[in-house]
Image (cartoon, rainbow, N blue to C red; front, side):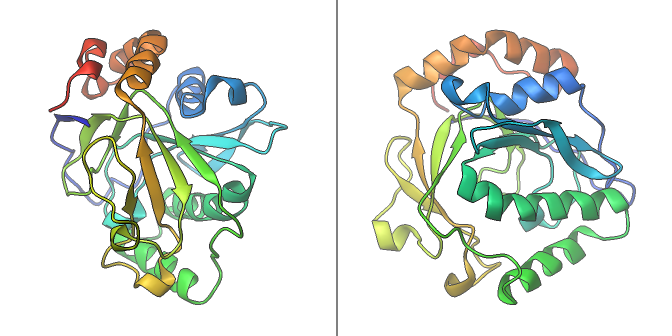
Length: 243
């Protein structure tokens, strides 16, 4: 995994209002989460900072993709997290509901980050949000993520990977370990007990050769992202190294 550490912006009372990404850039960035053969027929959701997500392009293959800008688990409002995420048809029917609700609540300006987190937890526990009904996959094959690597820092990560739905599964169950190549599980930690951990995934990182090909294929996108926001800059040549 490649981490490029940049300090996240400080939180302030007005930080709930996100900046709208240019539509063409947001669309291209969102689609980079998917493997190329699924992109043309996928539904793309774009973020309206005043309302939440809307359909930027209707797809036909059951896959959907978007750029996540709010990580509710951290109970914070920041401006500089960007994570393209895609889901198959089952994930689109279940997991997307949570992301969309979070975006709508943030856009309203009526909720604190802590209140949003508590609402999501309550809805999980009362059954409003349910686990996927079958095994499925979320592709996160973008050449760049700017997010939390499981810690409070916000960093740039060159880590294309596959996520398989694994509600209530953790590393103890699968013997997972982070070594940049093996499967491992991510879960809701202390936020949700194991019985309610419906947002768990088994992560499989792309191999080094695949990662290098993904970065090479997205050189133009990386340039556009760096031009849009300097903190989204990452050297494509660094994809073959780990730090």
